[in-house]
Amino acid sequence: MKNLKFTVIGAGHGGKAMAAHLALKGFPVKLFNRTYSKIHPIVKMKGIEIEGEINGFGKLELATDNIEEAVKDANVIMVVVPAFAHGAIAERCAPYLKDGQAVILNPGRTAGALEFINILHERGNYNDVTVAEAQTFIYASRGMGPASVKIFRVKQAIPVGAIPATKTDMILDLLNEAYSEFISATSVIETSFNNIGAVFHPAIAILNSSRIECTLGNFQFYVEGVTKSVAQILEAVDMERVEIAHALKCKNVLSAMDWLTMAYNVVEGSLFDGIHSNPGYAGIMAPQTINNRYITEDVPMSLVPISEFGKAAGVDTVAIDSLINLANIIFKTDFRKSGRNLKRLGLENLNIEQIRNVFINGITENQNKQ
Image 1 (cartoon, rainbow, N blue to C red):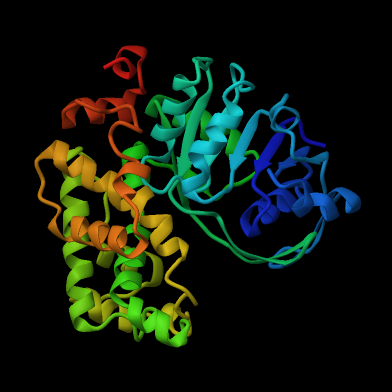
Image 2: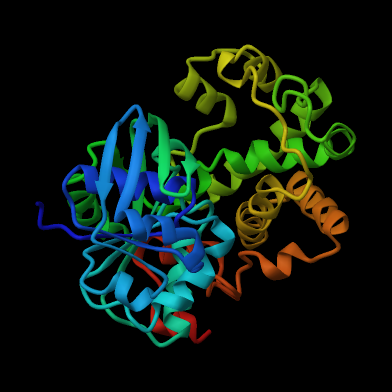
């Protein structure tokens, strides 16, 4: 057995895949889920069956709904839940996280690590806990049963950034004991702003809302959902995102078209042509309901913080703000209030250079009191 101890938080498709694979690699693994009934079969089997690209049985040290038991003695805590649950997880963990522990959000979406740290501080936890985030999730996976999971693919080259950025190498040293796929990001600005789902998911879902409701998602999300007009809106959202990243002095931000080239080897002159010439999007169907994570996660946890940073930087975010407003109307809610606004991130009243400093150097007690 290997000495590094992992805790995986979240027993959904991704959490089960990560817990099972880590256990199969020989690491002691604990799995936490807030709803015990969901992990009861895993408790009975004492592990998770894994199939697909990886096959075997991952025997777990513990599966529990007790967060204190779950994080106790863990070196690395892998949070694998939707971004809108990161805050609740931070609140649950705050009384129990100790010096020397590392928390990695898989993925962070936009500014997830900032939110997590700010909540720890709000709950009085100023221990030497390092919080980091991955740019995307390492697995393409699907739960096949209560105690089984299929891993379709383990993705390559997953950037990870820590707060402060000087601790990224330390985080990678830990992660690379289990995964060679994790690589260094320059900072959490890079992982946050190369969140391409923020560009694609909300806009396509919102602009195809009537079609989703009429057909229950019976159309190809990218191939049919992205017309030339929709693609123009995607390009506008993308331009705003990239401009704000540049205002934060992020040199490694990719445009959506650059990302398609990197991820799928697609080279085209426009986003419409790039999406439609990408064979990887063929056959991906739309969600069956408008009430899905493309909006309920990506609007408050991606578009809202990007818009908020834009205001601090003096960058107009007409396209992004339009999508947020439409989502608010559709869901009869205020995603700006519930999402990652500057107050929730502990960045209220800071200018863009001060915000960049927090991303790079960490949130200080004085900044939290502003």
